[in-house]
Length: 177
Image 1 (cartoon, helix red, strand yellow):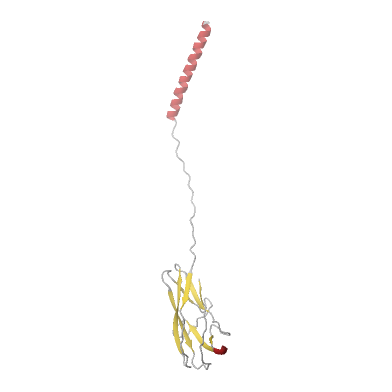
Image 2 (cartoon, rainbow, N blue to C red):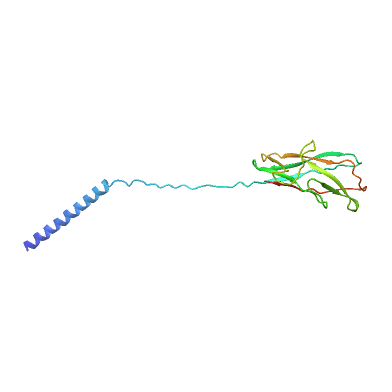
């Protein structure tokens, strides 16, 4: 029995010693474990937007008044506003009269009679205002906060023998941007 007792005591001491050693090692291990370094990873991404060009256009009438056979000249304005500094071109079509062109415009009157007139870009009435961008239109750019006022110079040539009555035409002003 003594032998068994000794074995048990030796075994118990071993287990106790092993347990204490494990606990001590465990505490030492926890205390001496270095803290994990924080690692970060980065990326980039694009932020984008598109600013759309937007323009508005308006025009005032060109009322020549009474034609007496003498040359008549008058001017009016077209107002163009675009956002930012958008470049633009303003063209004027031939009008609504049958057979009219941008260089030979016609107002229509009683019974289909016509009265010839012209629209110009300059006060000396030498530069026709048409509708072909880059050829006979007026270009510009606005700040987006104020309108560009474009002057249209109109002229009715002298010496036309036409039926008395009211004459009119409708011009379409187009802003291209």
